[in-house]
Length: 332
Ligand code: UDP
Image 1 (tube, helix red, strand yellow):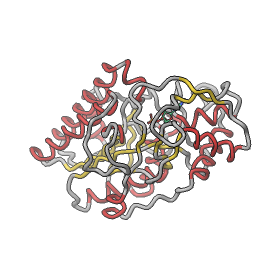
Image 2: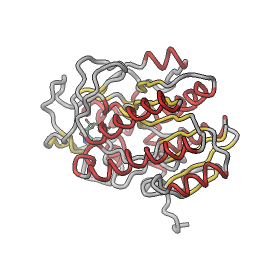
Image 3: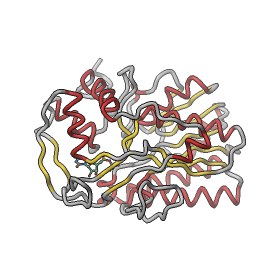
C-alpha cells in the first residue's frame, strides 16, 4: 500500500496519517499548506502541492507508485462557504475532479473520500441513516454532494472504487498531545470554547437559541478525530480487500447541544465560560446526529471515545500545551 493523502497536513488528515504510517508501505502527504501545518506531518514523505496542479499530482503519483488515495484536501467551513462559493466550488469540485482525472489516467482506482453530514441538510428523521434524503442547506454540503455523485458515476463508468465517509463533528486531539486542531481563523465550537478557557477570547457566542431543540441551541454529533482516522484505515483495507464503492456515516450516534458542550468544557477545565446568544449562523441545520450502524456492521468500526468529556479533555491537553497552535515555521 503506497497511499497518497491529500490534505494530510490538516487536522483530520494529520491524525489519519499518523495511523496509516503503521499500516502502509509508504504514506505521501500532498498539501498546499494554505490551511495545513508542515509540523503536523510526521515521518511521511511530504509534497507541497495544490490539487489544481495536475503536473505535480501526476509526478507525485508516478514517482511514489501510489496505489490508493485518501482525499481530505478541501475547504470545509459551513459559514464561510455561504459567502465564498467560488472558493468552495474551485477547491472542492474543480480540485477533486482534477484529482479523479489524474487517478484514472494513472490507473489509481481506490479512493477514500472526506464527505460530510452537511450533505443531508435538515434531516427528516434522527439519527440519520445513509439513505436519507440529501438536501444540503449550505454551499459546503452541496460541493461534497456533487463529488459523491461524480464518484458514483465514475465508479459505474470507469470502475473507480471509492468509500465516502460522511463525517459528523470531528473534535479532540491525539492523546499524545503533539498534534491537534489549529485553524486560522478558528470557527469550530470545541476549540473556540477551549480558547475562551485559555483567556484568548471574551467568551463564546452561541449562534441562536431559538431552534426546535430542548434548550434551543443546535445539536451535533461530536466524534473524536482518532476514531474518525481509524475508520479511514478500515475503509482502505476494505477497498484493498475487494469491497465495492460505498458510503458511510461516521459519528458517535449521540447528540449534544451547544450549551451542553459549553457545560462539558466547563467541567473538564474547571473554568467558567462567558456566553452570549447571538443570531443564527446561515446554513446551520438544527439537529445532525449520525446513525452509524452501517460502518460498525460492515467494517467492525467501534469508536474508542464515547464520553464527550473525555473527548474534550484530549482537545484541552493539546490547547493547553499549544495555546498558539503549532509553532509557526521560523519560530524555532
Ligand atoms: N457554534 C456556536 N458558536 C460558535 C461556533 C459554533 O454556537 O462560535 C455552533 C454552530 O452553530 C453549530 C455547532 O456550534 O450548531 C457546531 O459548529 P461547528 O462550526 O463546530 O461545526 P459544524 O456543525 O458547522 O460542522
